[in-house]
Amino acid sequence: MTLIRRTFIACAVGASLLASGLASAQDIKPHLIRFGYGLNEQSNQGRATKVLAEEVAKLSGGKMKLRAIGAAALGSDIQMQQALIGGAQEMMVGSTATLVGITKEMALWDTPFLFNNAQEADAVLDGPLGDRVRAKLEEKGLVGLVYWENGFRNLTNSKHAVAKLEDMNGIKLRVMQNNVFLDSFKTLGANAIPLPFSELFSALETKAVDGQENPYNTILSSKFYEIQKYLTVTNHVYSPWIVLASKKWWDSLSKDERAVLMAAAKTSRDFERKDTRAEAAKALDELKTKGMQVTVLAPTEAARMRDKLTRVNAGIAANVGMDLWRDTQAELARLRTKK
Ligand code: KDG
Image 1 (cartoon, rainbow, N blue to C red):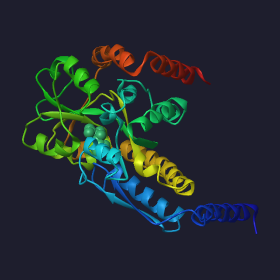
Image 2 (image 1 turned 135 degrees about the vertical axis):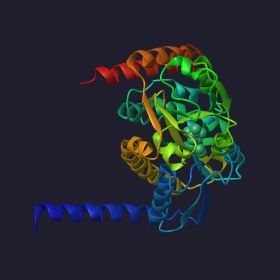
Image 3 (image 1 turned 30 degrees about the vertical axis):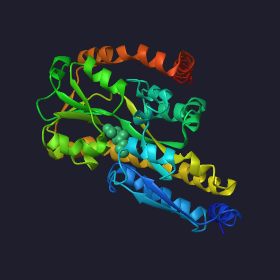
């Protein structure tokens, strides 16, 4: 038998031992976990939730079952967050941006152009700074397990191409329910209107709003291309999602049950980022074939937009705390000089 084959078998046995090791742990009772999310089942968010459910079942020997409930059937991000805090729902995944009313430090991740690329985002979110912000949730009744990738956000609208700052004037732009997004897009000259994601498609369809901003993946999976003619590539902010548990419920679990959930969450995170990035790489071409007119900003216009958007940074720094702000800037500088 070749060395490669022997190694492969050893890894496979190791993996199954890990799985059975957790599953054979004594202290795992049957659980039915209601897991809510806002996008549809076919989206990157839905696909990663499926992987999470499979991992939880595998690692618990089938004792812990995660019931995935998508398309905001359990409510908007904000409504689900309240249900977790009250103990009426066990888990969810949603945007960090919709958490700022509960944990102000989450606004750090709303900072326009904070991350230059996904590698920086992974390093910060999965490192001490991401942990520090996640830990702030616990005093408010939530447990943040892992960050998933929503992605770099881009602008769509149904009125006209946005090729320069002045083209934003008067556009009724839906934003997430979050003051940084509200202030950012008002600064750009848009008429910013906060709405939950669950109301977005109908608001666009009825022209209650003219436009919105989301990663390509969401524009594709939510079929916004059917009602949005114009897409402008801005990549104005990297948006994380975060997998959350009710702390009331989490505190009732055994160490083994929490170990199962954390191990499954990390596997789902790694799958989700890979899957989201693969989809995003092809999404722009797909959106063009669906009929969207894509505008890539000229460098001078991108610089003007960036200058306007980053005017909110001083307010974010004051809101999240200067220590956290400075530590984040220092970590990004370190990552950017690291060879
Ligand atoms: O449940 C939907 C949320 O994940 C939401 O945050 C998606 O980016 C989003 C938006 O624009 O609301």
